[in-house]
Image (cartoon, rainbow, N blue to C red; front, top):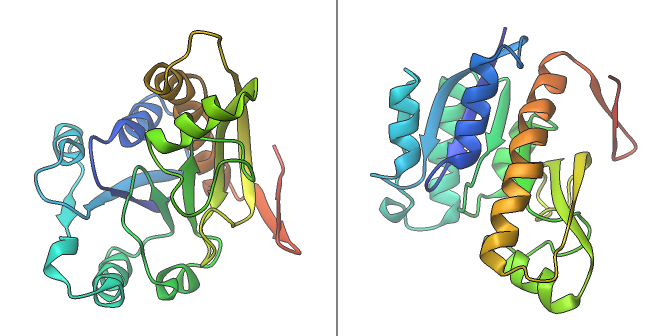
Length: 208
């Protein structure tokens, strides 16, 4: 059974999707063993508590810089013996020392179809605002491995979502979460735990 550590910074809707999938038996090869938050008092920690999952807080504000914070996070991940680390609304910049310590063992969900609307500055509602401003008709979500390149790691899964004429950034964000993020993030975790993702020449190949 692979140990899954989930990183959070806020409300934890993607964490809840993972917890719900686990309860439904949809991640048979893995178990969420710890939730780590970069902020105290966030609702994601309550979600973990309700599910009986241990949690830790590594408060970003207590560290002088990204490197110091990243060192503390890396130490915690090693203490938890994480086999898979999942970014679930983790809004904190982490030094490359962490991803290098867990090569192709860290994944993130991003609310667009990478390589569109991704990289520095593209997070939260900013992504959906950019999507609507561009006039594209299809957006979606991507689960990818985390590397030192922001949103640049190998793509694992993608799910398209149609943009509607009357969409606002808020309605589009909600639909992308419901129709894409909450579906493909648990699926990617299950595939990883089953050993069905192989990275070759920087490209993730999924064997279902």
